[in-house]
Image 1 (cartoon, rainbow, N blue to C red):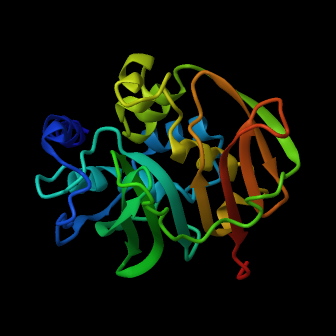
Image 2 (spheres, rainbow, N blue to C red):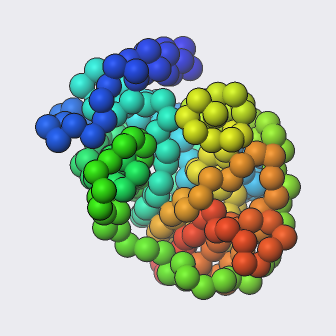
Length: 282
């Protein structure tokens, strides 16, 4: 935790001096790694509670992303990283879990930046996370993070696979009331204390009227509703619109596709769309 706080402080101090959108911008070479280590039971229990996962013994399919967050921060707060870390918005994630992981697994973690992509609202970076167990790749993800800045007219959206059912209205399953302190509570469990999630004042500094929920909380909370979260094989989720805190959202699903919509309105704004497919080797 002290090293994570130091990374966040260093990144916040360096952010005003970075100029995203430069045509000659390059990503830092190399990878950040963490040797195999045990999962701390306290933070894992807090994460399960805030996201709605049961204590089944299986590691939540999103949790390796949380374990690797300090590595991602170390990468994105480097002087050579071209985007300011403060205000970065998580836009999408793809996860492949090659097996069910458990809290007792000592995972080796690796994070690296794969590419920079022009976006109509700024510049997006793709960050890859890999988890290995005794050298075997057991979990991997790709995430997009958007740095918002002025762009030239006509800058296209990045090309990416859209989740199934994105244009359909899925059947509502539950309505969730989200408290104002959700971002601070999830930040305490995950270590992600990006100021856009914490308080209205810090969120307004980056163009949001109030604090917004973490994208990874929204997808984790949806995946926790799956009949067997421990058997999820692949996930694709797109964070379509911020969830303002406090607020009410509707969770909708048809068994494979899922959505998080503005609460109380079937035609309301869609915050999150995604798909989750189970493994067949049960």
